[in-house]
Length: 156
Image 1 (cartoon, helix red, strand yellow):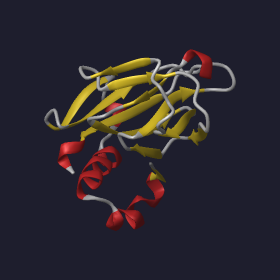
Image 2 (cartoon, helix red, strand yellow):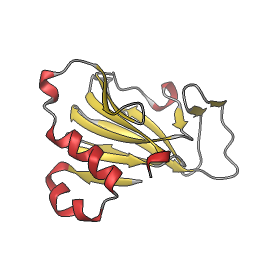
Image 3 (cartoon, helix red, strand yellow):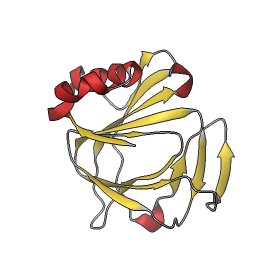
């Protein structure tokens, strides 16, 4: 997992893998105020962005997820969310097994889950082994505006 903020990207850019650079450059140069919710290609089906306006949820209403084929980059545009995170450990069994069509296995409770508070301008790069629970709130549910870039691990 990598956590960063758009205000620091120029100084951190030199240390990023070219695929991550391409994705973050796209995120930080695209005017998302002119775009509606939907999927936007960056590099065909190998790298694409999903602009969404979901509502945050409480932990017991939001399953955690893990991917095998795609990296995620979560980039928050408006609102506030917490992302739960846990590294894949041998003792974690999915509540719903891996679905290759959706590239997702779902998890319930996880020992050692950590919270990452995300505010506008922050990005979180999640590797396939990172189990994550996006869109969490500890208060009232609220709509956020965010982009999730999906990157096929074969690009690395």
